[in-house]
Amino acid sequence: AMARPAVIESGAQLLLMGFPRVAHYRALARQWGVARHVRLTGAIPYEQAPRYLALGDIALAPKRSATEGSGKLLPYMSMALPIVATDTPVHRQYLGEQAIYASQPSAPALAEAIVRCVAELPAQRQLAFSLRRRVQAQYTWQHAARQLDAVLQELAKSMS
Image (cartoon, rainbow, N blue to C red; front, side, top):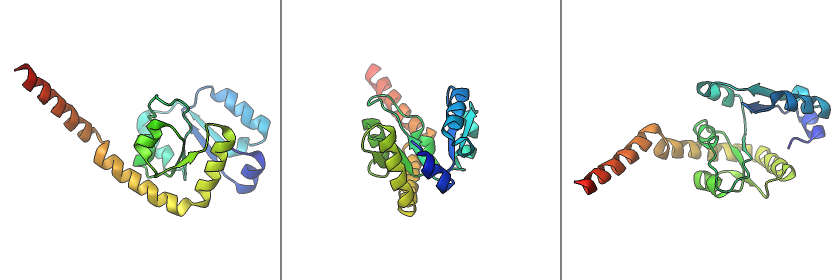
């Protein structure tokens, strides 16, 4: 989604964490003349993800599936990163109106949404902090444990 002239002029950096086929994508970045702007980490331990996410200004969630989960969102939200995402029901459920959505799941539409996010970065950062608060209120391990406990207690009542 990064257009070559815009990348070279802006000095933008793209960090892809844990991406499969790293060698293939490094070769593409060289071929396209943007290799000095692209970093591919390869596989990283999950607990190190916040260190890498802390380097970013924007997170991208380009999932195309309308029904598949998007495990990237909660770490992005917890790090208070502005998010550019494809417009899927799962993304809407987590992000509501507090993200920028690509008009369609295509590279040009994602690039346009990224440009918009950069242009609106101060406002998007404020929205990102509200997403962080949502994670803290609704998506922590403690919250999940309370929900599971309630379900198990209800099940135990119905069996007695």
